[in-house]
Image (cartoon, rainbow, N blue to C red; front, side, top):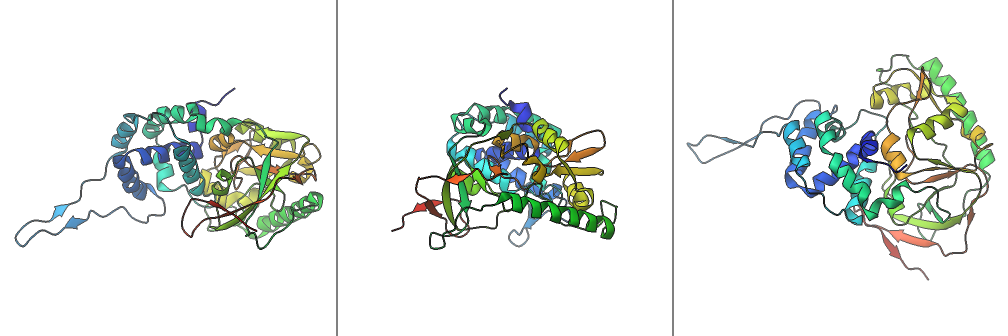
Length: 358
C-alpha cells in the first residue's frame, strides 16, 4: 500500500517536512513560522517582546506588525498552490526535517507549530503534492541492491569498509546492557530530572548504506557538519527487512526486545512526553534472522521521533537512524567494482560537489 497524506502527517518528521516546503513557498508563512516558532519553542525562555521603531522627534513609536496567529498560518498554508514539486525543493524540505530532529530535548517551536491541529490539517494538500511528485517516488521504495556507504573522510585518507559485524554487535550489546544497569542504579526514576545520555536506537560501527548520492550526504541526523566524504559503492544480498511502517519497527522490537528504560527514560520523555517502559531491537539477536534492515524515507517520516507502542506497557522510538539508509547486521555487504566517489561542500553550505582525483 502506498503512503498517503494522513500517513505522512502522522509523524513529527513528516509534518516538519511539509511545513518546510510551505515556508519555502511563501514569505508570509516563513515569517509567521519564525515568529510563532520562537514563542512555541520550550527553550525560548520567554515570549517575544514587542519591538518598536523610533520615529522622528515628536512622533510616536511605531510597533512591528503583530505576530500572526496559528489560524492565520493555517489559512495561509491552505491557500498555497503547491503545484509540481521539484526534486530540489523536495530534497531541501526533507533535509531540513532531518536537520531539525532532536531526541534529547523537546521538539522545537516549528515542530510544535506543525503539530497543532489547524496547521496539520492545512498541510494535507502539501503532503499529497509531495507524494504525487516524481521526485519522491524513491521515498517509499524497498531495499535497492545498488547502495553507497559514506566515509566522512577525504580522498587522501582512504579506508576499507568495516568488517566483523558479529564482534561489533556483541560489543554493542554488552555496552548497552552495562549502560542500562548503570543508569538504573545511578539515575532518578523521575523522567523530568535533568539527566541525559544515549538517545539513539541503532547500533553504531556497522556498515550503513544509502541508495542515492549525493542525496544521502545531506540526510544525516545530528550531523557533525562534515565537509568531505568518500562514497563507496556497495552490493549485498540476503535477508533484508524493510521498515515501511511503524508496525514493521514495533514487530522487530517485539521479536528481539532490549530493555533501555533507564538509559533512555529522560531523553525520550522530553521528546515524546511519554513515561513508561522502553525497548529497542537487540540488534545482535536480530542478526540471527536478518542480514540487513532498511528504513524507507516514508517510514522514517511517519514513525521517527514518536512513541510507538510495542505492547500495552512498552514503547519504542526510532531515533538516530537516517531516512533511506540500511544497517548491515551480517558480513554480506561488499565494496563493488564501481569507482569510489569523492565529495566536498564549503563550510556552512548545503550543496555537495563531486571532486575529481588523480
